[in-house]
Length: 71
Image 1: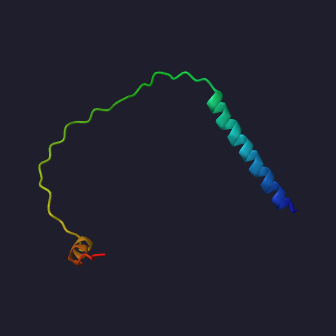
Image 2: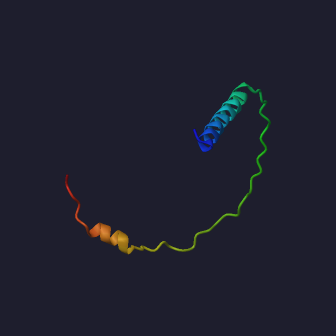
Image 3: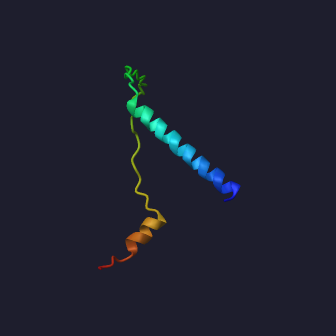
């Protein structure tokens, strides 16, 4: 075996053991949830004064012109 393979194998097992320990400590640990404080922002009301224009792009027009295929 080459040194590169040995180091790669050792790193893989170390990461596997670390992940297992992290998950295990999260499952076993007892944490008490704290009261969540949320800070909201009030935005001013918006009044719409314009009308939406009917805009058709070239792609949408090309798709609409193609006949539908029956399978």
